[in-house]
Length: 388
Image: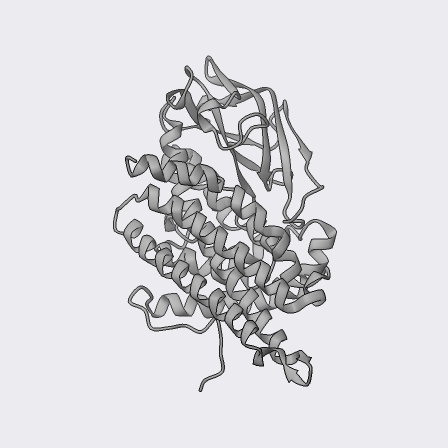
């Protein structure tokens, strides 16, 4: 029997040789440039800005973006590979911070003017400048329809006032895509505007006391009469929610892929420990109760992974299965929660010590159940999409 490997590639109709080549290249990058340093970065609460440049050099930041702006193109399966391979480092904080442009920059690529795209996207995709998305507000959470940040048109500028919070890369971002109310109440009065570092009235406050994602820079953003050129509007005025929803669908798919990757890492660590650990003169892996835990982890992860790939294929072929993408995220977060619990249980006290990826991921489970749309909101959104 072959040695068990939760990362083993199985034959699939979704992946071509260029996918496999990218996976191999990215795996080498993660193994050499990220994994050896994650404990140090986690304790420091940050990772070097130079990592963005390195990621840009290998084409990681350009996945899914047009080649004319420095992107590397590619379908959703390249994005899935990126999420899975980054998860091997065992730090959601590093992965989310490094890839914050995946939610900050797509609205620019979809709806920015040619001048704006040509000026901003190459710098983001090369890692020279950092991009973030700012939608969540202190009083709003997942309720986008109730956002209060407001932008008033004044000649050839918008005047922006309000606050955003829980913003990934919020302290170091040079370019922030901000959701603001430019019209009346509800979803029909929202626009997206690009705010750049150095605009007067734009300030930030770090959010440092977090349960997890320690290495990820998280902040509250403050906008006090920030003057934004009118050509920094993305798409049409009051049409921002359409762009936000397109972003959410892609984000949920990629979050699910990250969670699948973290689950596979936890399975690998649990199996390694169970083979090494001896209890009552027998390896832990010889205990039926432990083997059942591991195979149940595998079952749930494989089911989630299969659904992930099926939905990715549908998205690549023009479908927008918003309800199923919402439920996929719930499936992935509940699977990750199960795997984290069982992995710590298998490892016992060793899984409770800081510096081990199992301990870190156990803490990080909750942010995946909340960020990108909480489990409760995802279920409600799916029910509405299915006309229940």
